[in-house]
Image (tube, rainbow, N blue to C red):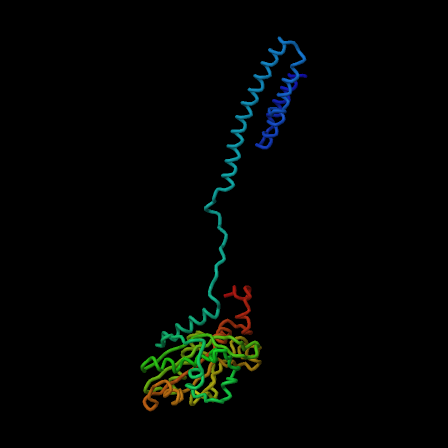
Length: 340
């Protein structure tokens, strides 16, 4: 055994220690129960008693010194490591934070709110009717008699019947007579909501879509009021003068009846999938409320006249944002929705 050489080796190894892991390894090699300093005592058996006392005392003193230095070093290393961790975790208030992605309104919801606001500023109240309807309000009260082909195929699709003998409303017009029964004239309301038709899905038609119905009942109402209201609405909605055309049409619940088309805003009238290459998009239908409908609503048809119109919120949204396929709205495609 060369005690002096071991002492020098221990001192050098102690000076090389840079972190807690190295210190633990050092302690295990030299200071542990099976460490090299402990082994020195086992080798003392082969020397005289006097030498054993002297050398044993030196080994004990050296072991105590190294133990103290190791403990001091451990304390220093822990402080340094704690300081490093604190620096790593320290918040830099000037450093830009991560942007938190939040949700937002669906484009159909945004446009619905905008439409409602425009009509409210024009003096219309916003009301809602039920999505599940009975045949009286969806058909009979609107002058659509039993056996009429409209009960199977309204202008854009077939009605969806439920097992309860009720139906998923095929148009928001179903709420017209409901509110005639509840509100005394003058009546000026819009009725937004979801509608359903078993239709062939394509770029401009969906099974589930949104409409908004307009109804105005008073003693003096004319086609001129209808035209003025729609022209004003479209101008406010598109924030510019919009080219429209009125085509004579037929609806059982209005007389006279009109289809109103607007110049396709997606292609500016050049022709695309949204307008079926015609340059025009049918956005609403309307007319003067049929006297029988007024009577079915519990009002005096000789005293009151009315106008009604219905339009697709989906199609107006397509025109607003220049979207060429209605199916995008219900696709759940986040890349599409995040644009709005």
